[in-house]
Image (cartoon, rainbow, N blue to C red; front, side, top):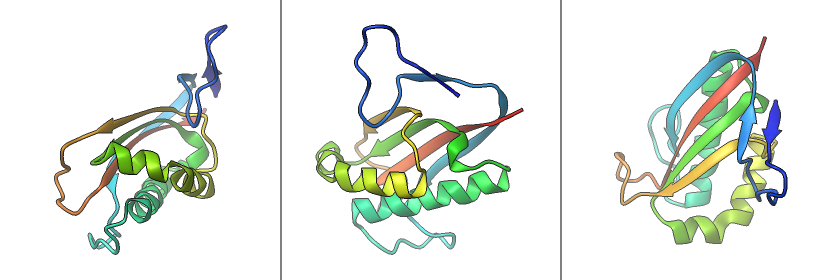
Length: 130
């Protein structure tokens, strides 16, 4: 994977502006903070991020991919303020479960998610090298 950083641009904090890869693509639909049975165990954003990331890792494994193959993530959060306040804790969980920040990432605040209890939804694209 090649991280794309145009000359003179500051290095982004916690993500990459772009990446270039080659291989087999694996797409993971938006994962939320419920378990494999569709049960929420917390209403806490950080707890839901942890569960959503664990769900992503499980789906990636089914496709023969691992967290290090993630090249793109889109995060939908119901509160920008809560996300920014929890960023240090979210970063720690991210490093624990995903392990790296070299992915192109977008975060968007939305008014609601389809599941009323959900506070975050995360989509992923991974590329398994040839």
